[in-house]
Image 1 (cartoon, rainbow, N blue to C red):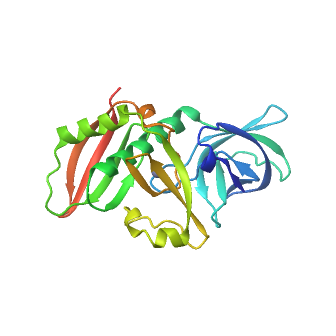
Image 2: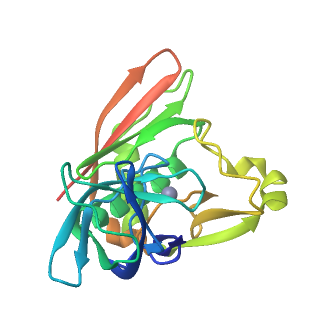
Length: 235
Ligand SMILES: [Zn+2]
């Protein structure tokens, strides 16, 4: 399956052909739908049929192989036959908010020392958990630094390295809970120029300015070592 979002997160729709369709989900030969993973929710959207009909997709999940995406249809929907041509279209407004939030998580990560132990990207709020034994985070200073980097409008782009290059640079891996998928020859990195570089397979905006102003919500103590930082859009 060709995963268009990997190279172009801004593509909202694509022409595709149904490969298989059953109760576990619908497979296409190519897709713009990002499947749940790395703390980012799966895309929702629609498959448009040539006869004018359409099929609502409520979620996207990873299938068995690395390049496999299962498009989850709404309950009770009639499934199209293999070979059917469709236009696959994501809910762009939702995805764009997720891309802004996800990119913001990278900026936040760059501002806090300590391993990332968990995280969740959402449409209106997101969170990252850090392993910080004896640290008090300064919410005001952190908010100002976050918004300054956003305003500086740094370029954001994916870049690929080999497994060997990643193995030689273990400092690139900030997230303890999600290991980058190695063993496939190459690993996708996400670079925010001058700010952050780490393995990530998610979707991001192309410049930090596109994130827009954000606010830090509660900073919670989740266990003795864990600090949870909540982020909201400030608009
Ligand atoms: Zn990312």
